Image (cartoon, rainbow over all chains, first blue to last red; front, side, top):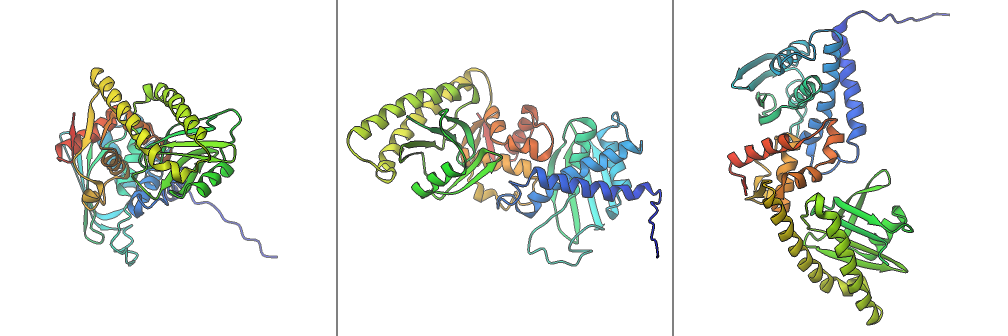
Length: 162
Length: 219
């Protein structure tokens, strides 16, 4: 009889994926009666789910001691984008309590990487992930001031960190 | 006797719901409403609490239906601050009960034949309450925000906005004018959905951004 045994490799970076799936699951449960509402649309549903994913990723960052509950909002943004590599080219700038994020060559873009036709919709989790993570760490959600999503091109998100 | 009294916002989300101790507010009651009042197209639940009624006609102000011995009252398009909603509700229950009795004494009536007159009565009451509610809020110094556009005009602009912000704008556009406390009450489901507390300063900051963008104004 052949026995297969799987050993868990200690690669903490893999935990982010697990955490995101956990967030996705709990987000689906918490929003189950709302996200199918036509008012939400794909981006709205993704915003809700990604907020939970962001909270879970932040828990992992705290667990791995990469951030602490005293970490500033801007450092949380930098750390989460650094650890969870969502794009090949990321530009982050901070100015007067605002954060500006430009994402190019995104590695999680359903259109650019997946090749799917999004039928004119967007489903970007970046805003939700960052919002959820900052809320979990600091207890206060940043305001998403502006989102400009152009799948397979350059997406830009501005946060108010006040 | 009124079994169920509901105050709903324009999107069908209950702001207040009361029921007599004997009333069983569940699927069978909802089915009763659905079968009797064809303006209601869908009913949504959160556990055994009504979370939303979807109407075919948005102009619906007030509906009453007597199904066998049960009476349901649905009130929509109301803007009453939470702290006075309860007293308004009681007052309306009394007034409405009187109207119900008067109508009943005139013979057998159906919800369809009553709709028009009840809508008018409801509309007058709601206008009066809205004025009272606004006066109280203004006296307390609480800011009111008023939408300057219909949401359909802003839908494309807000297409990729964060869902909370977009919903706040939609609620304001649908309601016309709202205080922050009212607004908070109307988006209360987002707290559980996003797993976070949505407080008044946060709402104010989002509203102020929309004021700066020229989409709403502060009263």
